[in-house]
Image (cartoon, rainbow, N blue to C red):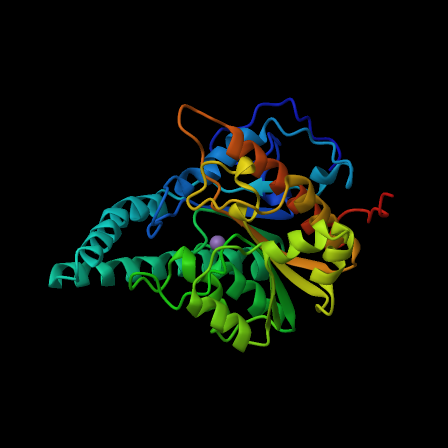
Length: 353
Ligand SMILES: [Mn+2]
């Protein structure tokens, strides 16, 4: 498979990183989910997959850590027009529900819209589940989700966990804990993804949250009560670093005691907003790009198997500003590489020192 000619033009509608490779030749299949129905603040995450795809053609394919990782075959599916249509149809309904709730309470019409949004979100989750299941169980390939907002990976996590049938952990990088039982009555919003995961029958053994710095009392309480959840709050990480502890030592701590199989759920707003200025809910603080790359390498070199991942909440800027997509595409390339390498599809690199 080392014969791709990256200079061949790629269809602009599918594929990724400018790779002229077909789906059946690829071991890593990315499902783009153009979804932001319940996004409450800034919008644009539904355009994230396309922004990442566009920017991805600028990513140089030689990876310092993993070499020619693309030989494993990375492929992103075309944007599903039905999902995009459903997103566009439901978004105004969700807005109406928010307006009514902020204005004092839901009318009957508002309640009907809320139900419609919740049903539509379940339809999206099931669509991602079916697509992921096909990739993992039928095609024996690896799956990554490219959001969309953070509600998009629930079905993928379910498909992966059901196929795995053993303990796994989720490493969740995010500015938010995403542990709200519901948000404005929406049961499948971006703010509830980890609540939904932890309350499912496919919950991981451990959930390690990295970089969280904006959360409510309900979430703080849940983090304290649920022994499966281990937070590394942004402020605590920074305090340890300011007191002389290295990021390497903190990465060892993130991985401490985790089972062999890990799923990575990466909300781009876990990074400092300079790396994701147009994401929906940016929060000051957070990880540097280089710290995220180092963490991904640490996960890979720890000998763990990455069973899947999501990259969510990347939103393009106005006037074709490619910065958010550019950062997202570079992180996506390293994640695809480690997904392949940790599953034995690439020669395993030795740690660089
Ligand atoms: Mn999130």
